[in-house]
Image 1 (cartoon, rainbow, N blue to C red):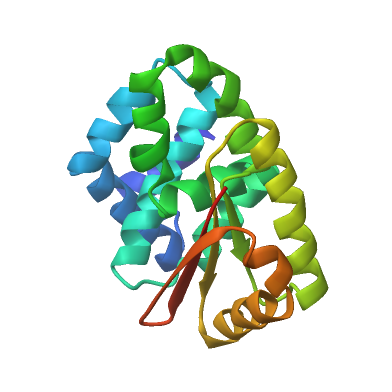
Image 2: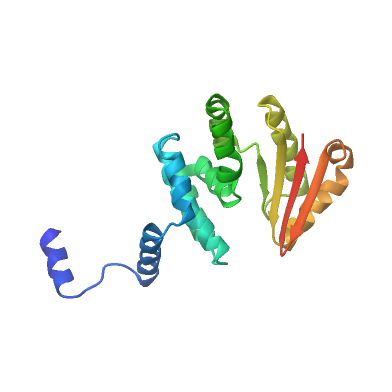
Length: 203
């Protein structure tokens, strides 16, 4: 391959599709200018598994593209295909700010608590439910009940239910209304703005 590659590169030929070339350029730009994301990476580099760190870096790139209103479906799918359900959980938690707003304060408060909870959080994601269009009402309610059990077991104090888009927002509101006995048992706060809903349950 070496002489073939050398000959073609010297001849000015390209080896990447336009889409791949554009993504590669974008990733290189992100590597050079991570801004505040670099602080997050510096914090977690030595304290989480290497593969989780790789997912976190990819997830921070995903989050930046999401904030820029870019289509991130393929990036999310790539993370899921490479890193499995754990990678998907880390991507979801990172996109919603849980690494900065929950895991960093937890580590700074108690390294022991962090070590006890971290793997549960990234492998089973008890902090949050991310409702998507393939979930029916029964699945949403079941997922909430399962996450509540896990959260109580590990002493977590809240559960967030996230939804993006009108369909998912309607599904979450319907679930809250149809399961009043469950939801009224907890203090809850509902945030809704510009196609996003977050329901916070205080355990």
